[in-house]
Every structure is written in structure tokens, then in C-alpha cells.
Length: 144
Image (cartoon, rainbow, N blue to C red):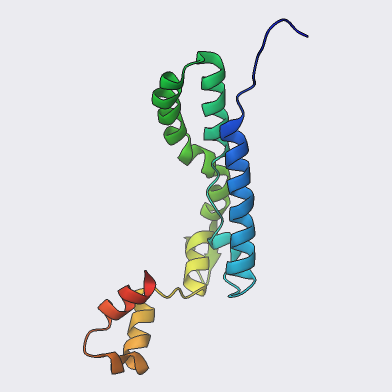
């Protein structure tokens, strides 16, 4: 039709879109649907910018070796900047009870997570003491 057999390399992009769709379904159904864990604390990483650059490098370079070396490097380097638009709103300063903190800190203070030392101290006062003297190995076993 247009003069040649050109295939558009979109394998990485399609794979990442499918992975992200599965991750969002998992996060919503399992974390929010069953345990009411706040979704804004468990959102999956945005892998799409790296996948697009990976496909563009394959399209322009037409070499799997170049794509593996340069594309893999670009994929890793774009991971943090690709997630910054999602993470940035959590770094907005807020005033709470006369103290300045970020929104992420405020969420962390209000939502007690099971891995924090405060929770372990609460567990040490409770029934987990029946497992023996040390709570940390038991907690580590059940957290894995």
C-alpha cells in the first residue's frame, strides 16, 4: 500500500497497558473492595512512558540489541519522572493542628499501617505474646 512492509512496534506499550489494567483491577478489587485500604496509598506505578520510549527506540533503531541496551536504560531512567505527576499532589504542604506537613505525611498519620512500630507495640500488648518472647520474627513471617 504505502511502499514497504513496515510493522509498528507496539509490543511494550500493549503489554504495559494490559499489565496496568490488571494492576488497577487488582488494587481496586483486593485492596479497596475487600479491606478498604485507601487506593491513593496503593496505586500501581506508571510504566507507560518507559514502554512508549522503548517502542520508539525499537522503531527508530530497528535493532533488538540497541533496544535492549538503550531502551532498557531509558525505561529505567523514565520510571521516576513518569510517576511524578501521580506522586506530586501528595507533596503539597498542608497545615494541620498548627503544624506544617505534606499531604502524604497527614495520610500516614491518620491511617495506621501494620508494619509500623506503633502497630507492633500494640500487638505486643495483645494476644500475639502467646507465640513467645519475640514478636518481630512472627510478624516478619506473616508479612511475607
